Image 1 (cartoon, rainbow, N blue to C red):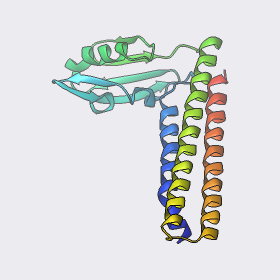
Image 2 (image 1 turned 60 degrees about the vertical axis):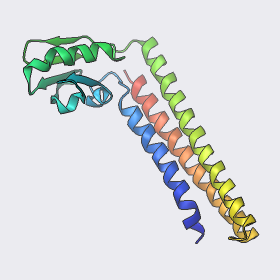
Image 3 (image 1 turned 90 degrees about the horizontal axis):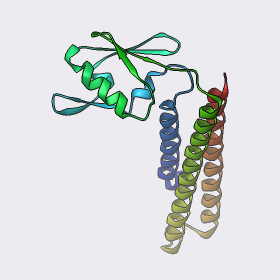
Image 4 (image 1 turned 30 degrees about the vertical axis):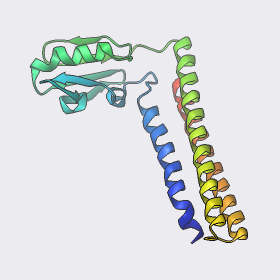
Length: 185
């Protein structure tokens, strides 16, 4: 019974960590990573369409992403979407494929990216702590309604705290890994 009351809050904490991991995938760390294109949509036949649904995305070399649209008439729209994004990359096209060449990150840019990574981690930790607060509030309401005993409340509060500590540690670990990845030259 104890874990059943905590389970929905644990799932929210897991989702926060998963969202952070997915967010980190879109931050480039010097190497070509197709996930940096995940948030870019292209105006295609009047509809906003994700790039990965318009063409084939490959990585022919460590620092090049190649986009080969299935419909060559979409090349201009893809270029426009990439230029409008915050990637800071200039697409090169030869009429058939678009190549995104990732320049070596400068030391200054690496430091900016690590600050961004740490900020995202801090936001995730705050979200996890908010979930803990919500869990404890819900448990106290259940105790007031006499749905759970007072000693069970204490145990459940401890369980909520342990989960919070676990997921905050996960966030810190992911943050450290991403920072190391960015700072590796």
